[in-house]
Amino acid sequence: MLRGRIHLNEDPGNPAIFKMARLQAEMLFQLGVKKLILTCAAGSLILPVEVGQIVVVRNFVLPSSVELPLWGGEHVMPEDALTPELAKLARNIETRLCVSYGSYAYVRGPGFEGRAHDKENLRRLGADIVGMSMVPSAAIAQLYQEEGVQTLGLAYITNDNIEEHSHEENRRRAIADREKLAQLLENIIKEL
Image (cartoon, rainbow, N blue to C red; front, side):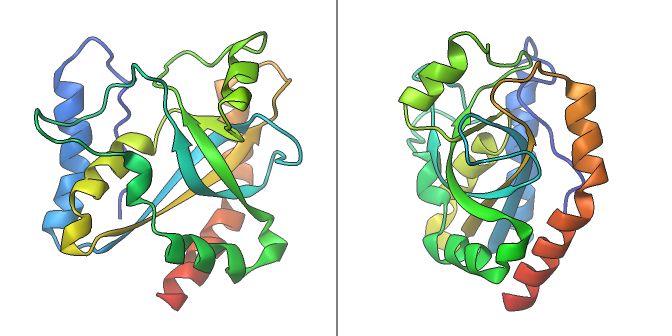
């Protein structure tokens, strides 16, 4: 289990960031992990997805210029890593935890998407939520699918689609509500 993970936006000018992001996922698979649960904080792009909900990620919306921690010859689609059976399990565990399905738009960051145009453009592409993580790890997980790796994506919604972005407020909300995600993870793990 990782407590946090390296994001590609943490040191954007450092090419080693791709190696570090890849290593943290590959390390788990080399140790024998077969079921990977990726969690993140994300922002809502649409109603009825609201702050405090947990969204089971059913697919990814990727900009055409997205960079992933892959080497030459590794051609993957990160959403192919997402395992429908795990998504269904998570969705059916407990509806009281406000679990719903959604499409996750990946932006590398560290800047937030703009309220004036970016959010609308992401919605037009089919995204329900947006965040700066999960996709690089899912891309590496997809490389290990043939070895039996299954992946589940869960996003805790920290901000809505109209409020001014605040990293500090998003962190505060996630920390204050962490027991909800912890309970869901505990219930999913019991079912695995």
